[in-house]
Length: 298
Image 1 (cartoon, one colour):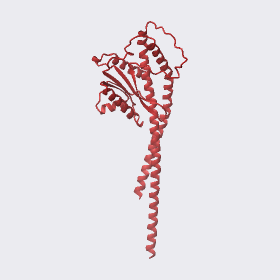
Image 2 (cartoon, rainbow, N blue to C red):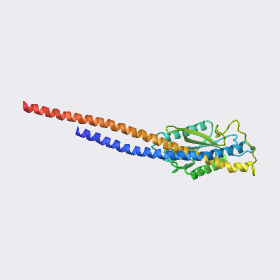
Image 3 (tube, rainbow, N blue to C red):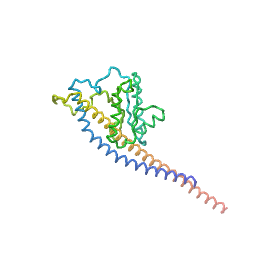
Image 4 (cartoon, rainbow, N blue to C red):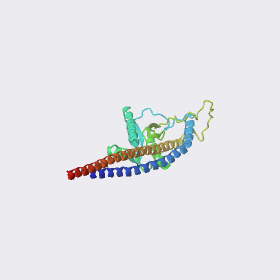
């Protein structure tokens, strides 16, 4: 009985230590998610303004720009997967990797070759473990993304998109990332980045009574598109990075809260078992004392 009590005591102490760690990680994630959401809200006005500008140029000009023209045949597509550098976030990384592979399988079913670009150590590790090739990797900047990382990703993708198919270029680019919906929900989302599809205008920004102005482009529409489209691509990628970071912190907070609740349950269960074992030991000792007294009396 004494050994059993020691085992239960050790399990209770282990669960209490685990609860301290998971509770601390939950509080850290809760503080980080507020900063991440503030960055998402701060970047939204610029993203909407760039989207309106690109929409205006693409709508009110008749220029066949490479970034806005649909090719006759798409033979090679790029899939950019936004994962995290760390784990302990529930199904955050696994669901986005599964979504990215499903998008790739859909593209292959359409007769397209798929090239992967990976963001986050978890995605890189997943592909290395399964010996899958990747054309580009970015790690170390997923918890608090910087705009320089978005610029680097955008420049790499634009260079691949502008390269001919025969030279290893791509003709289509898809982004796969977790979109922050709420503290409890983060949904995988896949969007086609290039060739450009202007579908980001919010219904609140476009009213039936709105009168659109007439545009004149200086020096010309093609030059304006050359200047503004890279900025638009960077803003979209940066938004995906920020959304992924906010989703990761929310997933970490939810996972750590669940772990803390499970630790509480373990502590309660092991405490009950320890009390039962102690009561059984006391009962056995009393029975032995009574039995010895009866033996002496007889």
